[in-house]
Image 1 (spheres, rainbow, N blue to C red):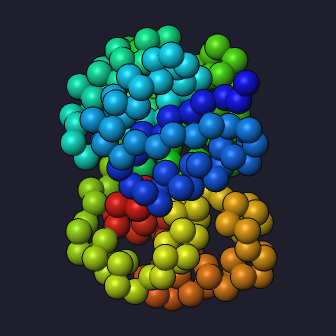
Image 2: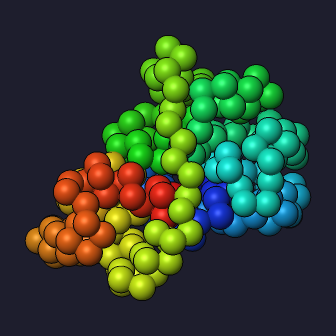
Length: 216
């Protein structure tokens, strides 16, 4: 029986990026998406007869308070493990959510190899927290800027936004090509165009700008 995973995130491009990663790691995976707290809770209720094996929850769903939404999802999910995700969040918020029952935290800029490791640990009955959380180091929160978001809508094509979202998750050109079914040379051209259009000097800066544009 295929594994069932619920992706709870209010950014469609990031949900697509996570879906692509999951489908590569778990080829027979049944993926369900929810873009709001109400959609997520409804999906969990509808799956009562055959619960999800894993829930990936954005800690900052647009219509939910971080603490309250995490508590609601964990309560509704019962025994299903919940991994928190965020482009940016404080260590305190993450630790509070873990205390409420979350099984770990995955930064949205996490590289593919570590993403796979985190999933494997949680699905195996364990938990996962990045070292910066364990060491009480702050995780910088960049507040979304609507002006940057609007600029992205105007200057980037849909494909370029898809590529940038994956760049921001730490994916390499080869991984992006595999996940979007593109040749690696085509991905390189897209990345070059993206950096030029948004005025970024490198991939790290592009990832930071993507976070400000609320792509993650």
